[in-house]
Image 1 (tube, rainbow over the protein chains, first blue to last red):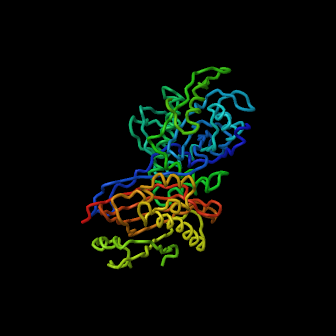
Image 2: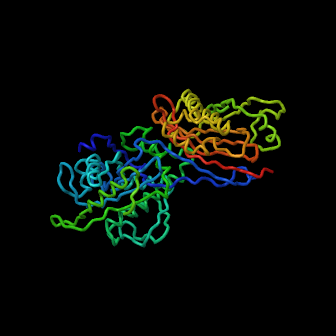
Image 3: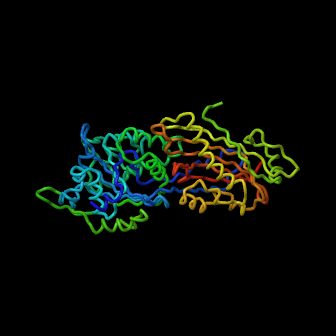
Length: 302
Length: 196
């Protein structure tokens, strides 16, 4: 409690849950065509404090009318972003991971949101990985759907076919998929039909995050795009971060270098607690991820 | 006249050698009013920079718009004056990036081949032929909180290697301690050769 509360752990919402992205490789088209292009140089950098920003991205399972900040967090991704180097990493936490929740006792990690809101969830994940998030961002199913639609859809690389009779009966084909908000949300939610269950779902969430961020970076040089995104967050979502702070984070997200992205899902075994199936997380690996990535947002190996 | 547009004049030092070759180049981007080529040594000429307001998200009063353009424009102008109007050792990075945060300034200096003419090779002189800056503003509640400046600088370099170089991209600014500061940038520099 003390470690996290000693820093500003803030709840943002939606929108900027971006994680990992594509550095803009801008227009290669010469603007004055009577000259030939003979050299091209690129330079980019962003100054955000702290140098490596950690954001806990949470997908709440709230239904319409429920408070998304006090339900269960079903998608949990701890995202680090080194704003100097453009490196970024995402550590997926299976939602059924059985962990100590400060002041509550052991429970599934996603219950921390229910018991103590984003602050407690941030502490719980921080204790598991050994990295304190600077921000906790909570989104809902419909928030994610709207966000993806707002940015014009995303392109996701799907490693194998899967479907879900309720969420996406038509199935997701293997390969590159163009998804709108509804499709991207379903892609992130399907679990039962995946061989690796929650682990595979967490990896799918990372694929969607990566696609969102690629899209954001691709459009970052559209006039007013970043300003619009931040303004939307400020208008429609509950946040205690200031607009300038959000603006800086958003610009930093757009500068993440796709070549410097590492994504891992925390491994674990299947256990049984009180008759309920849970994930017993590999806490040593969680700490290793944290130690690896704490300063430079890079995990050497999953 | 568009109410959001503020034309800014920048005094830039241009060597006379640069003007000769330029006169042979009938590029349609030559700004109106550029001094005619002269055999007389010229210490300086005026470069007109158009700093104009782009997209605004939120509310920004007319007076605030002008103030915003003025403040952000000052930062951009200083960068261009100290970074692109001169060559090689004449580039003063500490002056050029005075409007940047310390970290952003260090990043810009590390990329001085893009962000200035400090590393321009085989060039004796430079003319900044055109510069534009379009400012997108985030202004929730009527208070500007962040800005993206979309820039384009067109330069003619003369000497052993005669070419046009174009810098395009974006600067990111927020207000810190009352002053607008650049906290990040994303810039490209294209060198073009083989003038017709």
